[in-house]
Image (cartoon, rainbow, N blue to C red; front, side, top):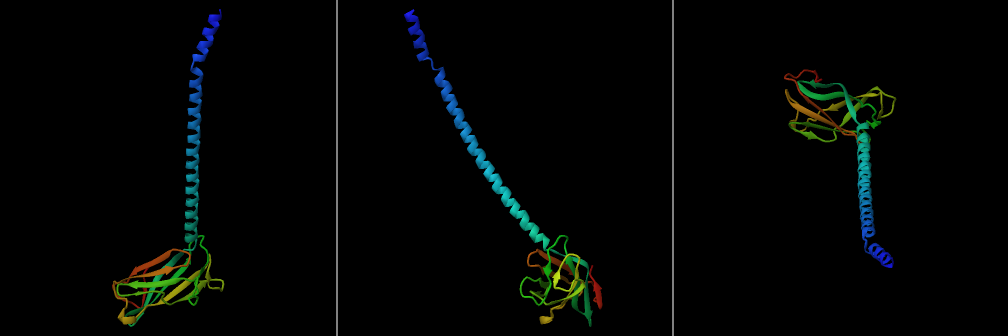
Length: 194
């Protein structure tokens, strides 16, 4: 009997099933730790990306809120067969933030550039007549301003028949609005360029 007991104890001491279970548990714990570190990295990266995406969306919204839109036609007037004035109407785009349209202001105002095949005039002089306004120089929702630009005549650069021209309207916080038109085949005293 004593031999039997010793043989049973010897088998228990020699049996490695418990060690295999311990090794498996250690490996499983290592997998769980690696998976949790990987999940943390993925979540952190996702949150960082989402935050950057949110910043981009808000920056785009701020830029879009300051945009202007053209209302009506672009009218070119001429005297003596030479175009000398461009007139158009501006309003805020839906949900836009107020924009300073004071041509005499030196900061936070709208800048207009004129481009045709012969010239590019930066920061051209313009005048503002308020069609709908509240008496200040800010273009606000529901207001309408008529802009008049005297065409540059330096160096004989005049608009002629079939000539293409562009006016860049640049608001301080918004994008650039391009007003591109082509002169008709014949120069009349008043030309509606739609």
